[in-house]
Length: 167
Image (cartoon, rainbow, N blue to C red; front, side, top):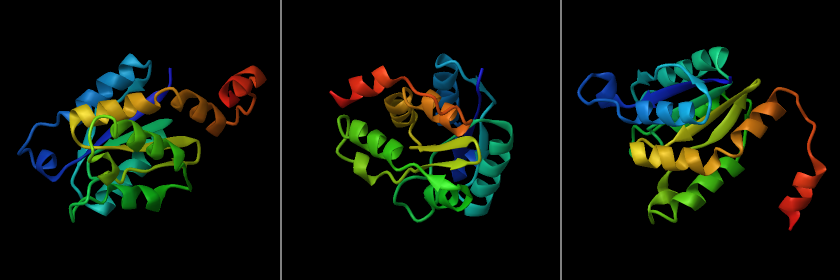
Protein backbone atom coordinates (compact mmCIF):
# COMPACT_ATOMS: atom_id res chain seq x y z
CA UNK A 1 0.00 0.00 0.00
CA UNK A 2 1.42 3.38 -1.04
CA UNK A 3 1.91 5.93 1.73
CA UNK A 4 0.32 9.35 1.19
CA UNK A 5 0.35 12.58 3.18
CA UNK A 6 -2.15 15.44 3.12
CA UNK A 7 -1.30 19.04 3.98
CA UNK A 8 -4.04 21.63 4.44
CA UNK A 9 -2.85 25.18 3.82
CA UNK A 10 -5.12 27.65 5.61
CA UNK A 11 -4.53 30.56 7.97
CA UNK A 12 -7.95 30.18 9.61
CA UNK A 13 -7.70 26.40 10.06
CA UNK A 14 -4.16 26.68 11.43
CA UNK A 15 -5.41 29.17 14.05
CA UNK A 16 -8.38 26.98 14.96
CA UNK A 17 -10.90 29.55 13.68
CA UNK A 18 -12.37 27.17 11.12
CA UNK A 19 -12.66 23.40 10.89
CA UNK A 20 -10.51 21.73 8.25
CA UNK A 21 -12.92 20.06 5.84
CA UNK A 22 -10.63 19.79 2.81
CA UNK A 23 -7.85 17.72 4.40
CA UNK A 24 -10.23 15.02 5.68
CA UNK A 25 -12.10 14.98 2.33
CA UNK A 26 -8.82 14.44 0.45
CA UNK A 27 -7.72 11.85 3.02
CA UNK A 28 -10.99 9.94 2.55
CA UNK A 29 -10.69 10.05 -1.25
CA UNK A 30 -7.10 8.80 -1.18
CA UNK A 31 -8.05 5.97 1.19
CA UNK A 32 -10.86 5.00 -1.20
CA UNK A 33 -8.22 4.84 -3.94
CA UNK A 34 -6.15 2.43 -1.84
CA UNK A 35 -3.53 4.72 -0.30
CA UNK A 36 -2.31 4.48 3.31
CA UNK A 37 -2.92 8.08 4.38
CA UNK A 38 -1.51 9.95 7.35
CA UNK A 39 -3.81 12.31 9.22
CA UNK A 40 -3.82 15.74 7.55
CA UNK A 41 -1.35 18.35 8.74
CA UNK A 42 -2.49 21.98 8.83
CA UNK A 43 -0.14 24.89 8.12
CA UNK A 44 -0.71 28.63 7.64
CA UNK A 45 -0.43 30.35 4.24
CA UNK A 46 3.27 31.06 4.73
CA UNK A 47 5.91 29.85 2.30
CA UNK A 48 8.44 28.60 4.87
CA UNK A 49 5.75 26.61 6.74
CA UNK A 50 4.42 25.11 3.51
CA UNK A 51 7.90 24.27 2.21
CA UNK A 52 8.87 22.61 5.51
CA UNK A 53 5.62 20.62 5.63
CA UNK A 54 6.07 19.37 2.05
CA UNK A 55 9.72 18.41 2.63
CA UNK A 56 8.85 16.62 5.86
CA UNK A 57 5.94 14.74 4.30
CA UNK A 58 8.07 13.74 1.29
CA UNK A 59 10.48 11.95 3.63
CA UNK A 60 7.61 9.75 4.86
CA UNK A 61 5.27 9.38 1.88
CA UNK A 62 5.40 8.65 -1.85
CA UNK A 63 2.47 10.98 -2.56
CA UNK A 64 2.08 14.39 -0.93
CA UNK A 65 -1.16 16.24 -1.60
CA UNK A 66 -1.76 19.82 -0.52
CA UNK A 67 -5.15 21.50 -0.39
CA UNK A 68 -5.54 25.26 -0.27
CA UNK A 69 -3.49 28.32 -1.13
CA UNK A 70 -3.69 27.91 -4.91
CA UNK A 71 -5.81 30.94 -5.79
CA UNK A 72 -5.02 34.56 -6.57
CA UNK A 73 -5.27 36.07 -3.10
CA UNK A 74 -2.06 37.71 -1.85
CA UNK A 75 -1.47 34.97 0.77
CA UNK A 76 -2.06 32.08 -1.70
CA UNK A 77 1.54 30.89 -2.01
CA UNK A 78 1.25 27.09 -2.13
CA UNK A 79 2.38 26.87 -5.79
CA UNK A 80 5.44 29.01 -5.09
CA UNK A 81 6.35 26.88 -2.06
CA UNK A 82 5.87 23.70 -4.07
CA UNK A 83 8.05 24.94 -6.92
CA UNK A 84 10.76 25.90 -4.42
CA UNK A 85 11.04 22.36 -3.00
CA UNK A 86 10.46 20.24 -6.11
CA UNK A 87 13.19 18.83 -8.35
CA UNK A 88 10.98 18.77 -11.45
CA UNK A 89 7.52 20.00 -12.39
CA UNK A 90 4.91 17.90 -14.17
CA UNK A 91 2.83 20.43 -16.09
CA UNK A 92 0.33 17.97 -17.60
CA UNK A 93 -1.31 16.91 -14.34
CA UNK A 94 -2.50 20.40 -13.27
CA UNK A 95 -3.42 21.14 -16.89
CA UNK A 96 -5.74 18.13 -16.83
CA UNK A 97 -7.20 19.17 -13.47
CA UNK A 98 -7.97 22.66 -14.79
CA UNK A 99 -9.49 21.26 -18.00
CA UNK A 100 -11.74 18.90 -16.03
CA UNK A 101 -12.57 21.64 -13.53
CA UNK A 102 -13.70 23.88 -16.38
CA UNK A 103 -16.55 21.44 -16.98
CA UNK A 104 -17.89 22.37 -13.52
CA UNK A 105 -16.94 26.03 -13.11
CA UNK A 106 -15.75 28.84 -15.38
CA UNK A 107 -13.35 29.86 -12.58
CA UNK A 108 -11.21 26.70 -12.88
CA UNK A 109 -8.44 28.47 -14.84
CA UNK A 110 -7.86 30.77 -11.86
CA UNK A 111 -6.39 27.97 -9.75
CA UNK A 112 -2.60 27.96 -9.86
CA UNK A 113 -1.90 24.51 -8.43
CA UNK A 114 1.20 22.69 -9.63
CA UNK A 115 2.56 19.16 -9.51
CA UNK A 116 6.17 18.15 -9.10
CA UNK A 117 8.62 15.65 -7.71
CA UNK A 118 10.97 15.44 -4.76
CA UNK A 119 13.21 12.45 -5.45
CA UNK A 120 10.71 9.56 -5.74
CA UNK A 121 7.78 11.46 -4.20
CA UNK A 122 5.00 13.10 -6.18
CA UNK A 123 3.66 16.43 -4.85
CA UNK A 124 0.22 17.59 -6.00
CA UNK A 125 -1.55 20.89 -5.19
CA UNK A 126 -5.35 20.87 -4.97
CA UNK A 127 -7.77 23.75 -4.40
CA UNK A 128 -8.95 24.51 -0.87
CA UNK A 129 -12.68 23.86 -1.25
CA UNK A 130 -13.46 20.26 -0.30
CA UNK A 131 -15.56 19.58 -3.40
CA UNK A 132 -12.99 21.17 -5.71
CA UNK A 133 -10.15 19.27 -4.08
CA UNK A 134 -11.90 15.91 -4.46
CA UNK A 135 -13.02 16.58 -8.06
CA UNK A 136 -9.50 17.63 -9.04
CA UNK A 137 -7.99 14.58 -7.37
CA UNK A 138 -10.44 12.25 -9.09
CA UNK A 139 -9.65 13.82 -12.47
CA UNK A 140 -6.03 12.65 -12.26
CA UNK A 141 -6.30 9.55 -10.04
CA UNK A 142 -5.77 7.24 -13.04
CA UNK A 143 -2.32 8.79 -13.64
CA UNK A 144 -0.95 8.67 -10.10
CA UNK A 145 -0.07 4.95 -9.81
CA UNK A 146 1.87 5.00 -13.08
CA UNK A 147 3.62 8.26 -12.17
CA UNK A 148 4.69 6.74 -8.84
CA UNK A 149 5.93 3.60 -10.59
CA UNK A 150 8.05 5.69 -12.95
CA UNK A 151 9.46 7.72 -10.07
CA UNK A 152 10.42 4.45 -8.35
CA UNK A 153 12.38 3.44 -11.45
CA UNK A 154 9.83 0.99 -12.79
CA UNK A 155 10.10 2.06 -16.42
CA UNK A 156 8.50 -0.97 -18.08
CA UNK A 157 5.37 -0.26 -20.04
CA UNK A 158 2.74 -2.20 -21.89
CA UNK A 159 3.01 -1.43 -25.62
CA UNK A 160 -0.63 -2.33 -26.19
CA UNK A 161 -1.61 0.37 -23.71
CA UNK A 162 0.41 2.92 -25.74
CA UNK A 163 -1.28 1.81 -28.95
CA UNK A 164 -4.70 2.28 -27.38
CA UNK A 165 -3.73 5.77 -26.27
CA UNK A 166 -2.76 6.75 -29.81
CA UNK A 167 -6.19 6.00 -31.30
